Length: 384
Image (cartoon, rainbow, N blue to C red; front, side):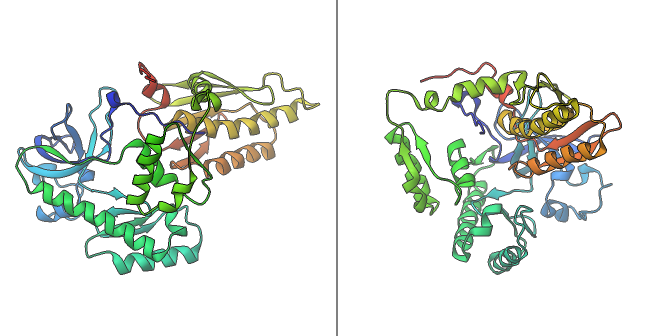
């Protein structure tokens, strides 16, 4: 299970494209602040300057020692995208390396690139996708195939590309009108993004709580040429609410609890800090095994599965340190490590096993996708 929360009072700007004006250039940090008409300016690092900006300044991509003042000037206008929402007091982060995600492609209009998601494991599928990409993409454009491209037809791949090019063309046209910081393109909303990214052959049903949302979703699926999925939409009926029927609120509360119980009697203790996430595994009262060795191994294997589920549920990211129950057998240690790696493969967000330290602590990293569940729901007000 995953929980995605959206509220008008917490409108996200990640993915939005703006026309902005450089307010300040900081040579010592190799960065700049760009005003885009929002409450906070965007923080722009030198690493986020696209090849076109570098070329216009006479700088090669590999020349990292060139001062940022050579490429950017105060008052300069530019088109840039929000690559990360601001968290806490931090400013949102911007990039001039524009990327537009579609159903099958991520379209990069300003850089000549071609790639395929690492989740597409079939070599034959990779070759087919690359062949299509070379046929359709223009000079100087980039395309990265998403996982769903593996089961898309050549025609579907072409249509998705054309839709993204159409969006970029409209962004460019809007950028030419006026000389003030402003929004050029707003990314898809939460529901549309989930539908675009998650609908696939493995989806069995889309449940909504009103005919109004069924119609809105149907219209969106028609726009995306995903009409075949409309038959999966059903409207929840009955006196019991949709959330109550599936015990959603109880699972949300569980996702905010510091302690998580395991089926075998053990438990996890999850502490979120600014620097990292610490997870402690406890054996508790696992009595299903006759010896302590088996109980410890069973608890750690259960914990490996539950921890990866909790990372998705709580939307935890960054550095995660796990203190498994101490194991004497190197074979048991490797079995738990293999279990962690196997479970991480099922995570849609990029997550990697880093290492086991000399103290027996497992370190993994998970790509930041915004605020965690606890941060999102802090002070949230729910309306019926």
